[in-house]
Length: 140
Image (spheres, helix red, strand yellow):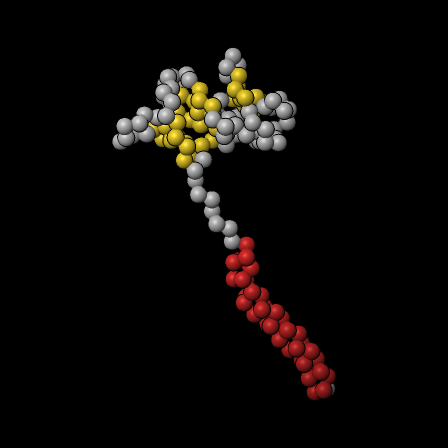
């Protein structure tokens, strides 16, 4: 009977030791795999808009559209969330429209219609102060 118990313990202990070695190897390799997957965060790019804008004006840059209202200034991306086409601004409808597949967005970047499923990205805007230049800084 003692032989049966010992015969049953040995394989159990050998399997347990194998699992311990596997866990130790994984713990040692984890930092290495974390290092391989690390990506340096992209630095924000600042775009200056020095053009004088009046209330209700729209400034179109290749990557963003800047809108000026009585109470606020905001910028939205001009890249369509469907396939990445550059959006055009329709002055009569006050909409951003994709020329490729006719997705439509409000000036706030909210999707109205079309194959695009997501809203447009919004960018922070600051008024330039403390310099001789007048205008706005858009952070992309």
